[in-house]
Image 1 (cartoon, one colour):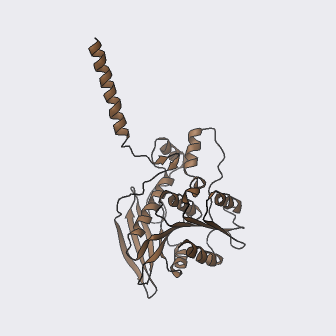
Image 2 (cartoon, helix red, strand yellow):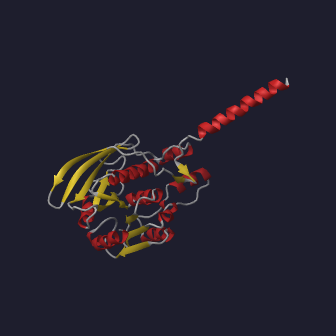
Length: 291
C-alpha cells in the first residue's frame, strides 16, 4: 500500500515538473505589466521596389511580414556616398504613409534615410483593428493586444532599416506623431539599440483608476507614460503646440516630466495638432541633437 502511495506521489511530482518545463518555454508578451519583446529578433525578409529616383534621393516601396500582417511602407534614401543616419516615422491614427511624405522629406533634407509605414489596419497594411474589450481579453490570456502588435511592427521596421546598407545602424532614431508618437515611445523603450526618440504632438494617457485590478494592469501596459523613463540614457525630444486641441499641452508636459535626462521639450505658439511647417527649425535642431 505504501509503495502504491509513493508511486502515485512520484507520478504527480513528475507531472508537475513536466508542466513547469513546458511553461518555461511559453512565450510571454508582458513583463511587469509592460509589453515585452526580445531584442534578438530573427533577421527580417523584405522586398524593395524603386518608384522614384532623382539626383537628391530615391524612394522605394517596401513590404514585410509581421505576425500575420503584411506591412507596407515608403523608404526615402538621400544620395550620399557615406552611410547616413536613419529615422522611422509613425503617422497619426488612421494616417497613411502617403500622408507622411512631407515629414519624410523634412528628414531627408537633414541627410536622414526615412522609413514610414502604414500601421496595422491602415492604408495598404492589413489587420483588423480590435475593440478595447477584445484587447483586454487578449491581455488576460497573455495574448498580444492590438497595441502590442503595432509595437512589434515598429520594432520590425527598425530591423528593416538596420539592414539597409546605406544606413548607419548605430544611428537610427524613432519618431511619430500623435498616436504614432505613443507607439514610438513604447518601441524606443523596448529596444536599447534605437538611438533616441523624436515625438511630435503626442503624450501618454491620463487614465482614471478602475475597480478591476486586471483592467488597471491592461491599461498600464498600453500607457506610454510607463515606458518613457526606460528610454534613458538615450535622448528623447518632444515637440508640441500650446494650442493643440487634440492632445492638450498639459498632457505632453506631464509625460515629459516622467522622462529622464537627456531630454528636451520644444513648445510652439503656432499650429494646432500634428506636424506644421513652423516645426521645421525645431525638427532640424532635434535631429542634430539626437545624432
